[in-house]
Every structure is written in structure tokens, then in C-alpha cells.
Amino acid sequence: MIWLLPVSVALTALMSLYLASLKGEQRVAHTWLAAAFALLAVMHGLTSFATSGQSASIHLIRPALAAGFPSLIFLHARALVRPPGLPKWGDLAHLIGPASLVVSQWLESHRALGTGWLVDLVIFAITIGYAMATFGLARRMVAPARRRWGVMLGSWLSAMAISDAVIAFEVMRSTPLSASIGLMIALAGLIGFLVYFLYSSLHQNGPVAWMRARLRTPALGFPERLEAHMMSREPWRDAELTVARLARQIGCPQRQISETVNDRWGMSVSRWLTTYRVTEAQRLMLETPKRPLVELMLDCGFQTRSNFNRAFKEIAGQSPSAWRAALAKGRP
Image (cartoon, rainbow, N blue to C red; front, side):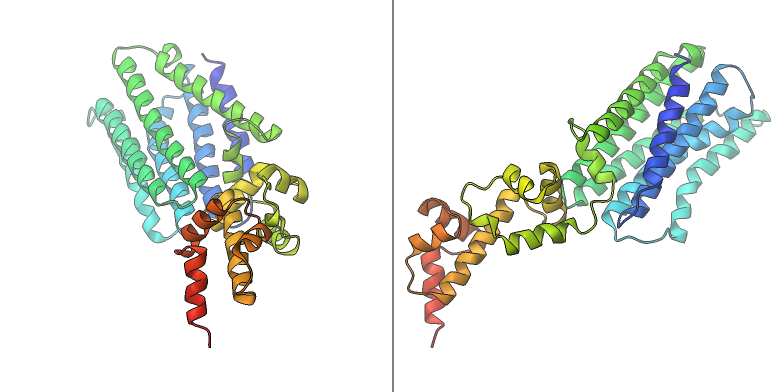
């Protein structure tokens, strides 16, 4: 199990550097997450020293770092909800937990107070509290992919709280850290997650590849380029248009289109295409009020009258016939 610690330190440090290098609108969120991974690397480095029996003073620092990690994850999630901005003085309140643990560990080291079990309980409570707060932030995230990321962060903190409780129980039974099954499982899970995270980011595929897109800055101007393509070439007039075909036209991954539409317009690609088609149908009704609806719907990219009526009513609130009749009543 000892060799897992240096591997974990290397991977978390690499992830911290990667996140710190990201720019763009979510730079503040990236910075908080980079700080969390950096703190995790330091924690695992100190744990590595502790398992080898070096420097008893390390035990004064580790609990404070363990209490500070959940707050950084929470601040990262909060930055994804709030408009970009610099940290405020109120954020110093998140230092209360780590500071109190430093004091309690100092008192314990001077035999003024036996706080071993209390420290573990406080760390567990802090981690669970921030996990619940992160779940709350996830519900406020508009984009589905970002909301899933918030849920994953809250789940991660919950899993960490449980693993910390298992490790504390083992230590209370005089099990050394080097033989802790809870620590081994936690490290193996973290390393597996980070390795697959980096692998899927490198190869642009895999079930967690979307996380990389959530943590990196999208290609500059891609939403504008996508919108310009839709306006100039009008690919939505093709009734058989798919995300794959649209991606080939622009020269980008399918996933980038789906995520951009989700983040920028807050809807699925199919509804986004339908919006273009319905908007064009309304324009044609306005300019050519006598034109048959069947010709009009085919020109806008609809294949059947039922699909046209359903999509039009979903977006405009009325059927095509009712909308055109209302429009006619408003004409001179």
C-alpha cells in the first residue's frame, strides 16, 4: 500500500497544474479546484511520511488540511453557480474549521486535552456538511452536464467522509496507517479515477470524458462560430440533420456541439434545431400568409405535419393554423 501514496501525490499534483493553467470565464472555479488537488497532494505526501514514522509534528498539520479540502471543493462548486469574481472577506469563514483543528491538535500535543476522537468527529462533520452544501449548489446549476459534475463533487466528499470514518475506526483499534484497509481502498479508488480521467481527456472519449470539457475552457468563439454556421448555411432545413452530420460540417467533435448548446442555450440539440425551424416557419407565415402550410413546413425541415404541429405548439404556444389566424387578425 505504501507505493500508492507517491503515485497519488504525483497524479494529484499533475491535475492541480493542469487546472491552474486553464483560462477563460471559469478561471476562478478552476483555481479553487486546482488548490483542492494541490492540498490533496500535500495531504498524501504527509501521510506517506506518517506511515514511515517520520516527524510527529506532521500530525498537527494533517487534520487541518483534511478539514480544508472540503471547503475548497465547495468554493469550486459555488464559483460555477455565481458570476466570476474574486474571493471576498467572508470566504475567510471557511478557515474556522481548519484553524480549530490546529488548536485542538496543539492542545493534545501538550497533554492539555485528549482530542483524538473529537478531531476525527469534527473532520467527518465538516466533510459531510460541505458535501450536503455542494449537493445544494448542484441543484442550482442550469446546465445538465454541470449539474452532474456538482453531484459528482458532493458524492466524492461523501465517500471521503465515509473512508475517513473507516480509517479513524481502524486507528482506534491500534491499526497502523501502513496497514489500513480503508486508506488503501481510498487511495486505489482515487488513483483509478485520476488515471481514467487523464486517459479519457487525452483520447477524447470514455464515460468521464465530459468532465474534461466541464473543467477546461471551450474553444474561443465556438458558440459564435456555431451560430454563424446555422445562420449562413441553414443546415436545419435538412430534415435528416443529425449531430454527427452537423459536427462534420463544422469540423469538431459531436460532444462539443452538444455541450456548447447545453451550456450556452440551456437546451438539447434537437430542441435547439427545432427552434430554428419554428422561427423560420413564423417568418415565412409573416412574409407569405397565403402559402400552404405543407410547403412551408417542408421548407423549414419538418417531414410530417404531426411533427410540425407538435413542435410549433411546444415553442410558440399555438398550432401553426391558430398562430397564422391570430397573425391575420392583427393585419390591416
